[in-house]
Image (cartoon, rainbow, N blue to C red):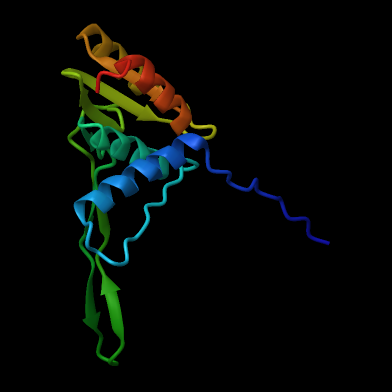
Length: 167
């Protein structure tokens, strides 16, 4: 008999519910006559979901925030040919081009209250690499703020202490 590992059911934290409320209020204010508004729905249980939550929160509060892509890109050099028997074959290969960003760059770059803030997203068992630690030291030595975020509630707590109601 095969035993299946049960995954924990996702329970949306209050901080994510607050983000949804703020996003919906802004959307309804921008389009008051739209008869069928689509309600925003967010999750913070994946790295992509948490990154999206943080960026939207910052933008809703008048800050500048952007996601930094450090993965590079794939160049597809494959093409299809037809052989003498009439079959289609694929020839060529896929090539990977490394990113030109600084090694260890944070996932989110933001400007909050006039200061540069770099935010690294870590979900689950994910931990900082040595390059990311060096990048953190460079940012902090230059007077910037470096933040390591594991869940959205942690980020909102940092936000409220950092802004103290100013933004």
